[in-house]
Image 1: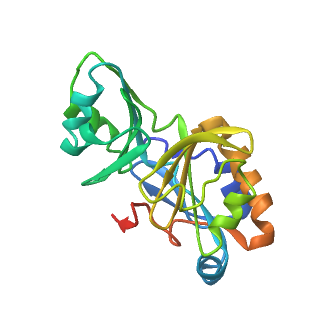
Image 2: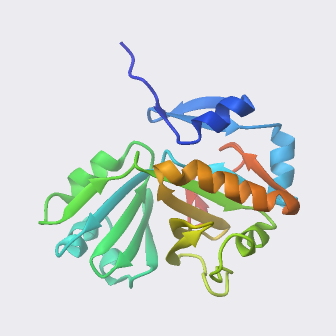
Length: 223
């Protein structure tokens, strides 16, 4: 018997859009929500919002967190809070002195957790518990301006920076990529954030798109 595919919190949106679907590491993902040409045009001239909820997400916190994440990437120990470091296969976000959020390839979270081992910390696989939305495109900053009271422009939040704030009253961790913003929020809030960003972005050419438009990548380098 085949295992049931894991579904994004945006599954109702995909069904309504008659999206072109595909399975990645046991997850149903949307490759396209509309015409490929219109999604590509929005990326170049407007902005796009894409579901990346299938990526791996691991929370590591506690006195042994530094030692644990160093097994994934040595440089993680020297990264200051609210900054990040890339490693082969993902990114490590340092939220506080003893709390990290590890992002990895879809389906690889159990492998990463096994590699870290036990260090007396709280390590939780949040792959299914957090949604992830990528915002990119030529007019992405205009969407950001309409979505948060906090200044999240590149001069304040350069590539690699991390911030924890509210966007449309929804608590989020935002990871600044070289070419966009990655929003990480509770699964149950993902569709509400998607709807809010889509609503405010309508006037600046925001289009909901699929992974064919912008595949998952880290820091602007595709993986």
